[in-house]
Image (cartoon, rainbow, N blue to C red):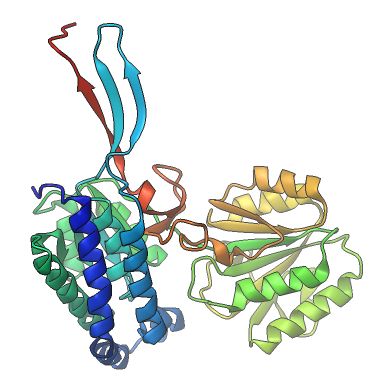
Length: 398
């Protein structure tokens, strides 16, 4: 077992990592090009996540520096109590031990997610996808260099070059201690990990996010939010897939026609239920099952709804439990919506694209959990800890 590294060493490794990423920037981008050229799939969101350019390297550097500047999440006192018998009792945060991160296509996870887990005092096991192997191995090489230069064991970050069969075998019967698994990727990957894992899994679930345009909505604001949430980054799990429009909104035909034309400017495929498929540019949905789907593509479904209560019921039935937004000037309706929607993040008059650790003040994120235990929504540095009881006595017996 690795002895917990001092916070000074952990921070020094992260700052060294930022420096090495900058120095090796050209090499990382060149190596990533070979991964991009070798990718033969037709998943545009996978390709988007795989690509490393200057701005992506800048983000990795910023994440490492920011993590180094944050307080130590380990050993934070959460509760203290003086027992009648004189014992002093404390409850403090503690690292998990070893965190396995299984992810697809995103070389930046090798820096950001690993960095959060490392800063939280954990040993990191990384299992990336074959499509980003060369990029990942280069970044792990930099981790090892940073660790060596700060006199820390390279065991703190380990890359597992496993195929699917080997990964399954490791999940079912790990050859080393694993305390927590974080899958970062599509629904198939998450289902695979949950099926085979023998230790706790943090589920970074699907998006399938909804925007409800309530009858008292500011329509210009609604259009701005919908276009941003749908088109700004289609590969993100916080992107928008479904729009519900209040049947009683004023100037409804004009609003719907404007929405369609604005979405068409971005080549978004628009699907709609019966009442909306009569509009030019909207294709009729074939089955209600489509309301469950996460698209990660230039594709959206629009529907009409009778009331805020019906919108809440529909979102709670079909969404992925990630994010939902209400557009309205009616504060009471917004409050009802936000209190009753069962998603990790709820918005009033804002885009779902802000469900992100960096945007919500956490500095970065390991994952966005759609589970309710042990943490929901973006998992930042302060959430990647468990806790431990410290009891000091002088001979007390019970």
